[in-house]
Image (cartoon, rainbow, N blue to C red; front, top):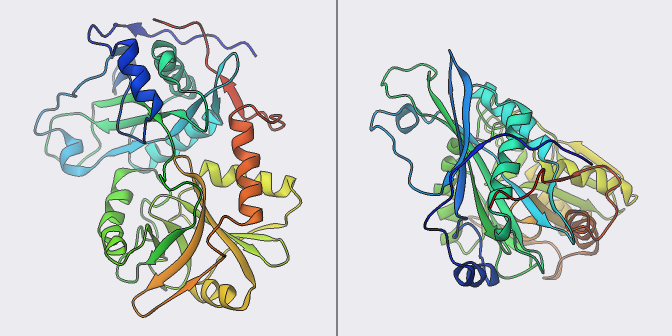
Length: 368
């Protein structure tokens, strides 16, 4: 596949990490704690449109105290990964991230970023910082594109100046304990998003809304929190940042249907395809809290797992609430969960054939 490199101005970081410093980080990167030497930036105004694409030294962002994003939370973001293959660096379904960012932009009244700008910004940054892409194990370079209202004003209206940026962070495992079932706290006081709200957009407000119930869950000894629908408080939606799947005793798989308040996960969509490839009957429908509880208790539900870009696929063990709990599985990842996870990461890391055309190589030679 030949892809034309995106033209972006490049400014080398005079304070880039030394080879030794970078290698020390890559040996144990953690998740989201270290960042590469550069970042991509572009600007938008109604008159000029998107302009001045540039890769510049990673560093603090200067904002006026009246910048709209600080007052009205007009911002969106994405998350995807670059993977080191034997002779290339590959992205996984990046076009889907570009499309979802456009949908999020529409919901938050931000200007849509053209797909070629989205893909070009990723290419430009990864080319500049290609030595930061870790290899070995299940390491990757996590990419965080984001867009925010940078106009200085205090009126409540869509901003007339917007900034788009991409930063990158070498990533190891999201959960340090390995592939072990996580425990989930059931939030009955709070919801993540409401009908007609921003639940299907990838914006910071949705995640901010999950932080207090997340704290509540941690206080009860849980790793994550699950949210119910905001109207009936009956139907399972998603975790604070991951979609859910339920494996049935007959081998079929069910995931909550998208309702407008659930994020359309790209990992979720990939799993729908891969599970069908593996012979599983996959259904998208509403799943009630009672179905979770009784299904685990009577053996109808044999495995539960969550998925997302950062954590990939994570088994779910215990669901806990104020006066009870129910545990699915034996403390290890189930057979179907492990099978699906392996099918996904093997494509991402180039160990299996990419039959669906999901991988895309980084375009052009390194900038550095």
